[in-house]
Length: 184
Image (cartoon, rainbow, N blue to C red; front, side, top):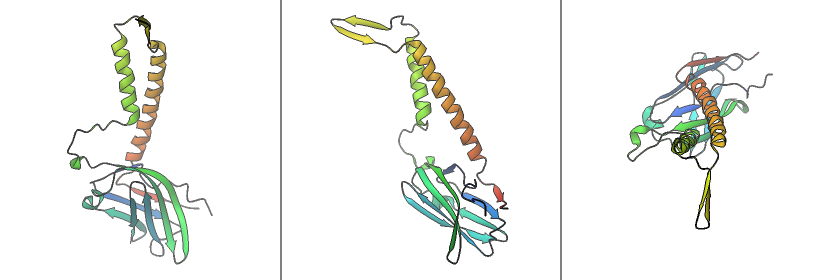
């Protein structure tokens, strides 16, 4: 039997306050004979049981219900079961994003990488008019990070942000779509 725990069914991101709908089919495990459940552990515990519709499993959680989900990273386990037999279909991490309709104070939606990249670029911009990398006044010395080092650091963070955006794009493409998986 193949290692079904390496499949990709779950999205990378779920937005709290929106409808969560995920349909999938496992040919070797017909929905008419098996049940599916999703356990998510992180800032809170979330357990969902799929409904069996025709030949596929479906998670359909209302926006009113997901609005109560606490934002953060969750460790997830998607399982199928029949009597005392349990198979782990997927293990993954999922980011549950905060429901922006529930935010009442100032909010900065940038992630850590974007915040650091913006800070590095602000330092580079602030340094554009300063030609000294170090100076001393009254026995106190200040040394600035060399521009070349800042540029290298900026490039590293730009690359990391590009990779993160590519992963996010792939993850968001799974939301609300049917995913059919065939086991051979």
